[in-house]
Amino acid sequence: MTIRRLGYACINMTLGGDTVPKKQRITTNRTCRLATAQDKGISHIASLVYSNITDLLSILQWNESQGIRLFRMSSDMVPFLSHPDFAYTIDDLDKYFPVSDALAAIGKFVSAHDHRLSFHPGPFNVLASPRKDVVLKTIRELNATADLCDRMGLPANHNCKINIHVGGAYGEPDEALARFCRNSYMLSASALSRLTVENDDRASLYSVSDLYEHVYKNTQIPIVFDYHHHHFCTGGLTEQQALELAISTWPDDIVPTVHYSESHELHVGNDKPTPKHSILIHAIPDTYGNTIDVMVEAKGKELAILPHMGLEAKEEW
Image 1 (tube, helix red, strand yellow):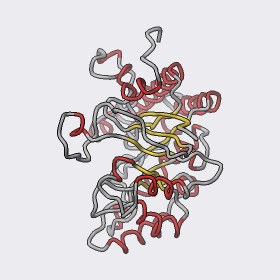
Image 2: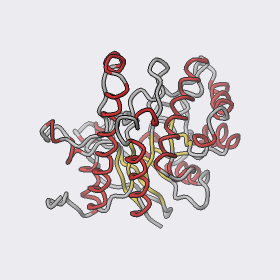
Image 3: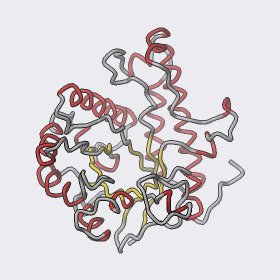
Image 4: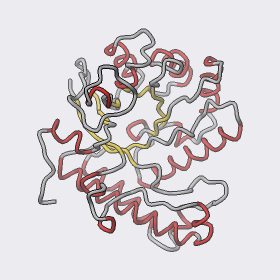
């Protein structure tokens, strides 16, 4: 039992970090202000999206050259796709650039090389919110994200997870958890079939045990275990107990994904850890005999995981 894949999130520092000349950067988060999008129109958005998606393929090709087959896609890759004040579809973009073909090329590469992709939409996506407008905005965003996955031909299951947090407790955590469960059924089948939920890094929010009792038992939505968050919100469980409880929520035919990072404070000589992520990591996590995929959330991105794969970036790329 071991780590099957080791991966990183959204940005490749080697190809698109600050040390790379701006015009040469390979990145998937080109965006613009809403006012600019409204002024320049769909053709401008189509150009940004097409560049983002073709650069995603370049990043995946680089990852393959390093033996990295786990990657989180940026939710900024397709700006304003679910925005109520700037409505458009991928089909609209195809009138200007072959965006659908570029998305399909991602899926073909992933399938051919056994890569695993995911999304982690931002914290403004809150299915547990007591505000109807927030819930509806969240549903639009998650459904649009799932549609991107479908257009790439990615699996409509938790192998291609769309991961979120429950959100706030709003002074009534049990009711917030119940709202999360109820509102999850308002998602499209495509979105719900990929949805996962992650434990929090604050004791006032939700531990793995909270998610297991109140979300998984009611919805069968798998739990993504975050090692770092668990230090701040244990729910009375040891690390091994929390990991294995989260793993038990995943379908038998899909390798569970976990998140791993380390406290920045422990890397700068301070004894008291905080939720802030470090740039690099000292070690990879203990699997306790389980087979898992590990998404490393260090700020150093691929530079944080290469040393733990026995690799340095290959210069021939």
